[in-house]
Amino acid sequence: GESVGLHLPTLSVQEGDNSIINCAYSNSASDYFIWYKQESGKGPQFIIDIRSNMDKRQGQRVTVLLNKTVKHLSLQIAATQPGDSAVYFCAEIRSNTGFQKLVFGTGTRLLVSP
Amino acid sequence: GAVVSQHPSRVICKSGTSVKIECRSLDFQATTMFWYRQFPKQSLMLMATSNEGSKATYEQGVEKDKFLINHASLTLSTLTVTSAHPEDSSFYICSASEGNQPQHFGDGTRLSIL
Image 1 (cartoon, rainbow over the protein chains, first blue to last red):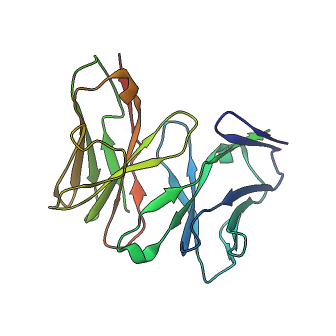
Image 2: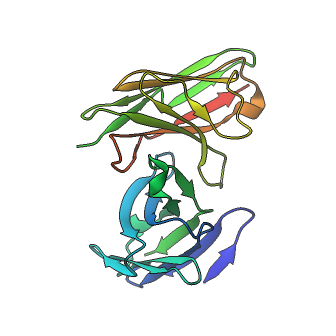
C-alpha cells in the first residue's frame, strides 16, 4: 500500500511485485528527465533518463513513462527485489540553460518486503 | 568510470568552527560542479553551481559568505561552511559534470554541529 509520511511518501511492496513510482514535475519547459535511486547515507545513483521527445524508455527491469500533457513521470520496476529498497527521486532539467541544472522532486521511499 | 569522491563522509564539530568538504572527480574533468544540501526525509536542494576558474553562482537564499565554494581545478571543488551552527547540520552532496554530460554524484558528507 501507499502512505504519505511527514515529508516522504512511502510505497511498500512484496518481493517479486511490480512497483510504480510517480512524479509530477513543475516546469513545462523541462525537456530532460532523470530518475535517481538514493540509498541511506549515499548520494543519488542514476537509474534511467528520458527526453521530452519520447514517452517511454526501457532499461533493465525499469521503464520510465512520460506524459507531457499532465507533466507526469513514472518509474516502473519489474520483479522488485529487496535491494531495490531506497528513496527514488525524479529530476527535471531545462537543457537549454547551458548546463544541467537539476531540479529534484520530493522523492518516494520504496520498501520491499521479502 | 565517472567517479566522484567526497571527503570527509562524516564530520562532527563544535558550534563556531569552520568545516571544509572536498569533492573530487577521479577520472574525468569536472568543468561544472554542484553543491546540494539535503535535510532528513527531504529532497536535494541545489545550493550553488561552480565552473572551474569562475566564481560560484548561488541559489536564492543561500549565503555566499556562509558557504564558501572554490573550484580552482578541473578535478577539485571545496565547500567551506564558515562559523557553523547547529542549524547548518545536514547532508551535503556534491556532483560534477564534464561539459553537458550528466552529473555524477559523490556519496555525501554528514555534517553535525554540536
